[in-house]
Image (cartoon, rainbow, N blue to C red; front, side):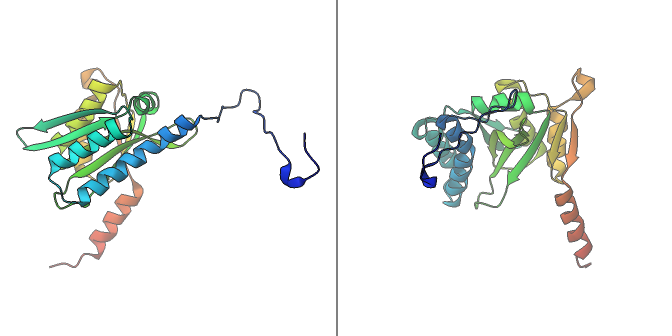
Length: 214
């Protein structure tokens, strides 16, 4: 029904039969924004050059108390490497990782603080072809053992994550850590193949080509 004034006309759009329901509550919409809030918070805290334990504490407190997000937080350390990190995940995001994690994109953020801690984020592509966050982890040194430990915690402690393909950049460390986490057929599991990002590979090639020989 419409009125005589065009500015007051209301158009109702109904769902086509058997089409996906794109209606979301305000709480669901806010939940989709939370990973961005957490990511921004980490970047802000590390920029202050606080000691790493203080950064971890601030992120954990803000995520669990201030925002009341219900994040699950796990600290870990690798004694033989003298490295440590923090995994923080949300149950709703873990559901997406379990359901759509057959294809996962691993992304890392570098050079945001003088301690050189790195923020990693796992993304999955949902049924609407949108990339959503599956989990985060924050480590003080990027090596295969430390990254693998974070991935293993996410996979074994928090959810059943069975990935067939993981998209990474040209990092050999990430490729090794994925192989450590997903043992494949030898362990009676599905093989997990590492796919390299074409953009990162081409960028690396161009850097190597343009390097001046000494």
